[in-house]
Image 1 (cartoon, protein in one colour):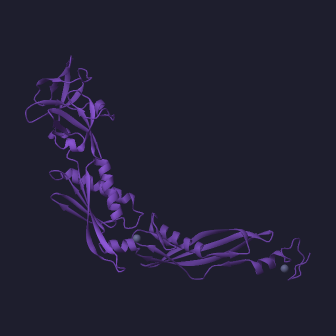
Image 2 (spheres, protein in one colour):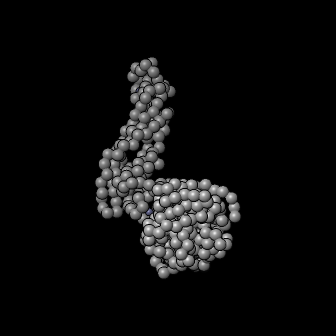
Image 3 (cartoon, helix red, strand yellow):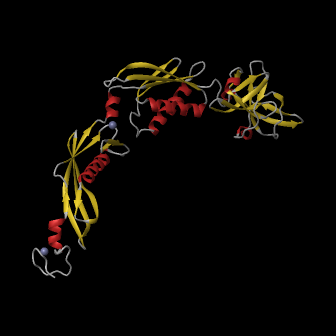
Length: 363
Ligand SMILES: [Zn+2]
Ligand SMILES: [Zn+2]
């Protein structure tokens, strides 16, 4: 058989053409000679089809990804069936603090007529280092919401740090979302104010704090202006208040001492220190209780004897022996924690066994 164009002898013809002529006439691999891409120099986001994709570990990685993506998006192949493209980075070079040149080899292969064909090209992509909308707003101290973190009687230095860490952790977890940043953090006597780029994330963080520590959230809005399109812009305030009691606290409620084992939204898991029964108390009820001490104020003790209805404990501060009425499984020699209240009464705190998770009854 002879090729209709060049007349050469060929074993197989595709549409009357030898494979060489078919390739020349039918296969088209189009790739513009000038290709551009964009990377945010701040968050290393890669712009692709109008959207920012974040998650690159380094600037080089983002540049490489942006260039390869731009090639993939501008590559047009026709005349090949089962075509596949392999894009390989040849080199990256920094042209200026705002621009990289990334060079790639692009290999397209597929079936041309009935033969396997391959086309190869080398292209350079201009990758501009810019600021994405989110980082631009961050740089201009933009914020949509304030998260106020408060506690009864103010925040201790320790708790303040712990909460700030939790807040930043939650924001970090969402770092691939738009406006996932805190522009300002104000330390006030009554607590900490966090200025959030995104109101949506501020709300999610407030909810995460509530889930972790219990407490309440109050939302309010103020008018922040009018957008260019005439929409009113609201600024949100999420006032998160820590619960009055936290895990480890001992409170007196209706003449009975309870130790808080855990706190969740609206509820406290407590241990009745006399009956040693576990209960769940609504936070609103616990609020009427009186705080008589915290776990960190407890003193160590050693069980010296056990008898009917109670245990004898040597407290290791004044070395006096006290008898505690409590239905608890302990043996002589066991180490325990005691709390002395302002009236001089001793309370046997939850043993590690009792402090373990488990719910019983509602009070
Ligand atoms: Zn031919
Ligand atoms: Zn960015």
